[in-house]
Amino acid sequence: MVRTGLLMIAILLAVVLADDVKAEGSNDTDVYQRKRIQLKKRYQGYFEHFEKKSKYAKVRRKGRDDWKKRQKAKKIEREKAREAYDPNSKRAYDTPKLELAWEKQMELVQKQKRQARQRFIESRDQLRKIEENSERVPQEAEVGFITPEELED
Image 1 (spheres, rainbow, N blue to C red):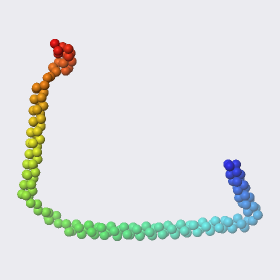
Image 2: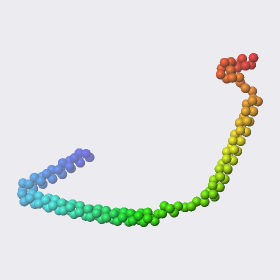
Image 3: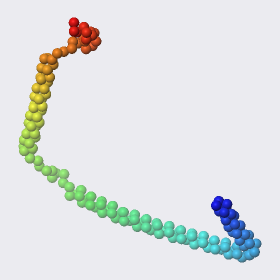
Image 4: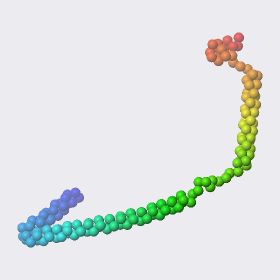
């Protein structure tokens, strides 16, 4: 399979090269004609490129102009909002009513804290009673100064 592919490529190359050699040797006007075609395409390509470049620049300028219009409209809107703003028109708060609500809220918080503290004290006292009434391992045994056999004596 590889050999047949290589063979076909070699045959194709030979045909193409033979056509080029024949064209160069047989007729000089053919070479000139191909050169004219190449130059004409290059010339047309240059102008196409130049035309596309100018169209792109126009589109870009149009987009820039649209952006400037939008920014100008936003600036005018901000300026109107700034002029409409009155720093002296602050809301008046009902201070005594707010203070009463705050005091009630703080009383509720203090009540909750007192209840939590009372629960803690009760549980602590129960734990202390349990520790006092239970049998204890002497401290010397806990740290290893005496062995469990010595405790039984």
